[in-house]
Image (tube, rainbow, N blue to C red; front, side, top):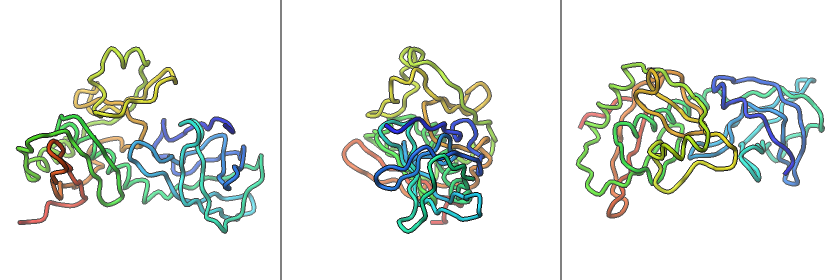
Length: 247
């Protein structure tokens, strides 16, 4: 392991620009920093792209961001032909904000869907234009029109969204906070990050390391484009931006 990266995005998802010092370059050319605002691929949310700016104005294009041996090691992947910075060099880190903000809105929409459909989650993927959440749901019994209306009611209510930290013991005492059927939050760090919706988390609270908007109204207009049957007890809900198209 080459070191621990301070993940600035965990406390401030709106930090589109920051400074970080280069602490290492791995054998594949990945850049490690002491701190970063670039989100690393995890939990179904893609890692950030953007560029680093050197003191002379030279730009280093970042094509992706991933984790290393642990979640605390964040690796920035430059384009193959990009220059490599020097160890100890301070860079200005510019996230592709338009892309990140769409992912923040989409990730938040996935949380709203899990409120409307309170079933065990078997899979999820966040995308810029479409996201999906899979539920352990034997008989759908729900319609895309009904789910869309319920999600948009949460958007319109403009509930606040915030994060708080709990201990692993607190999570163990409240197992229902985990909505995923097969995936548990990583243990060993001593604390778990919760994403909460509503005053005093009255709407929802669940472990999540991703980036989200600060109030539900920012999600904007969304709809369920399709509900697919993926096995006897699995239903896939596809979330898309915009209004539900007329039949």
